[in-house]
Image 1 (cartoon, rainbow over the protein chains, first blue to last red):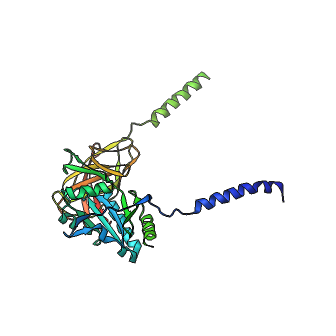
Image 2 (cartoon, rainbow over the protein chains, first blue to last red):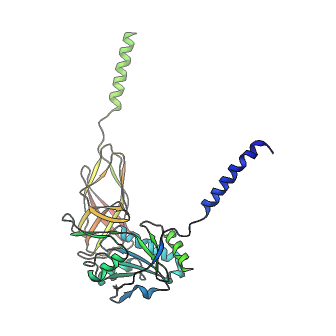
Image 3 (cartoon, one colour):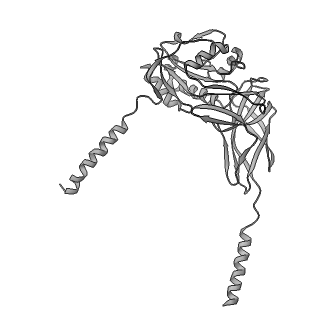
Length: 196
Length: 147
C-alpha cells in the first residue's frame, strides 16, 4: 500500500466518525424541557361555553398556544400550521388536542372564539375566561402578554404576546416548546414521537 | 495631436451627458395580493392582506394609505418578532426602494382590515385601493386563500 494512503487513514476515520455523529437525528425537533415539568392544570371556558380542563385531556398530546383573534398575522399563521399538522397526522389527529388560549379576553368572548376557530378547523379548541382565571395560566406557562394602547389604530389596543407552541404529552407532562414558524412536518414528527 | 485630443474629449463628454438622463419616477407593480379567511364584526372582524410591491423606477416610493369597501378602517401594520414574542404596530408608511421590492408577508408587514363588514371566505376577491406618495392610487384585488 502506498505510503500516502496509509497517512490518509486516520483522517478518513475521523471524517467517518464525525459523519456518523452528525447523521444521528435528534430525538425531537422542538426545544426539549429538561427536566420536563408536570403541566399545570387549569379549567377555562371553550368556544361552546363549556368548561375545558387540561387534566381531562390525558391520553392525548396537547398543543397549547396563546394568541388573540384580532391578530391577523402570527396567530392565523400558527393555526394554519396546526391545520396542516392535523391533516398530516391523519387518524393520529384524534389523539391530539389543539388548544388556543386568548390573551385578549376583553374582545375574545365565547361567541367570538366560536366564530373564529372554525375558520381553521371544527376540532380546534378556543379558550377564554375572566382575567382572574387566565392570569395563573399565563404565569404557569411563562406567557408574556402586554396590552399596548395605540391612539393611532382603530383597534385601540394591541397585545404583544409569546408566539410559542407548548407541547404536553399524553401523561400530562409538559415536554417541548415549538417556536413560531416551526414547519408542520417538524411538529408532526414530535407529536408522533410523543404518541408512541 | 492636440486637435484629436480635443475632439475625443468632446465626444466623451457628449456620451457621458447622454448616459446620465434624469432619473425616472417610481414604477409600482403589485404581485400576488392575498388575504386570509376572517369573521365579520365592528371590532372583532379583522383581516390581513399580503402582497409583494415592486418598484421598477429609479425613485423610491412609499405606500402611505389603503382603503377598502369591506372594512371600516384600513391600516398599515408591521409585525416584530423578538425572542418569540410577537408585537404588532401601526406604521405611517411602507417604503418601496428604487429598483427594489418590499414583501408584505406574515411576520413582516400587512395591510390591516379592521371592522370587516362581511366574512372573508376562501375564493372571495377583495378590492383594495392603495395610495402611494408619488404614484398615486392603484386598486388591486386580493384573493382570500384557505389557511
